[in-house]
Image 1: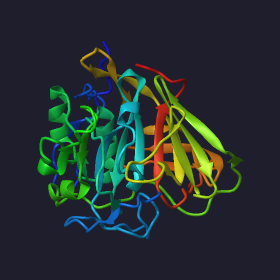
Image 2: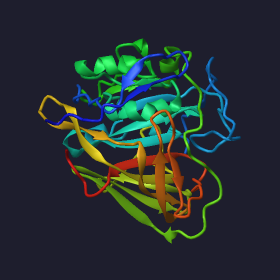
Image 3: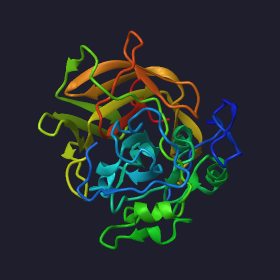
Image 4: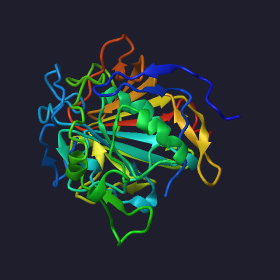
Length: 343
């Protein structure tokens, strides 16, 4: 009961990785215990960073750090974690549902790094379904349930979790455990010198499509959380709020992005649960579905398509044309395809 029945096998062919990851049968681990930030620093390219043929950075549409390594970090996204550190420096931010109807972020960095990111929290199975599109990136997190460890080892990532990251992780004694673990991204990447550079993940950047509905704000909802995004013509980006309060970055400024994608994806119960017995959601990010893309103060109806987990997600208009994002930080807000649902 509660096991995912899709037993599709996928062999990852990312550089240096020949393992097999059982996709669809994986279940999440239990809970364990672009605006650029003023503190952002340019990155130096990794040894195995792969070039992009797009002419711009595939994660944010910019022209900085085209060969820099990709680093994904799991960040807590509940009230005790606020304000978070470093989120504003990410090129791409995913919002994922976790146990109890709460959410967690996966912040993806490449073009710039903040001095500090966190609070860093544990990985979930939905991460392993998202990460293969980046080739073999560095993946930072605080840990996983023991049953999850073998899947992390098989995944096409460089595991730079707290277990492997050494002095890159520190505890902030002014905050309570488990909301006080932070990491220095530059030190994290020293533990993964061969982390792959950015590659095409399906996003396209450029002029806005025709039409669109003028929108001043909108709210994304989960069973126990909500995030509101309000358009700021002055800042030319969407400013985030969490449970009605401005979502600030401890490194400076308000959290938010130039493009916010609300992607509707089927959310089901995985075979894992936390120590309280709450099942971990499994977010199905392959296949097709609908989305709403918010940019430049407008909302655009979109369709999304991702053929396999080693491919990116394309977003198109109703007539099948690529739906361009605004250059800058992108948020992909994953919500259930239907009403908020706690599996």
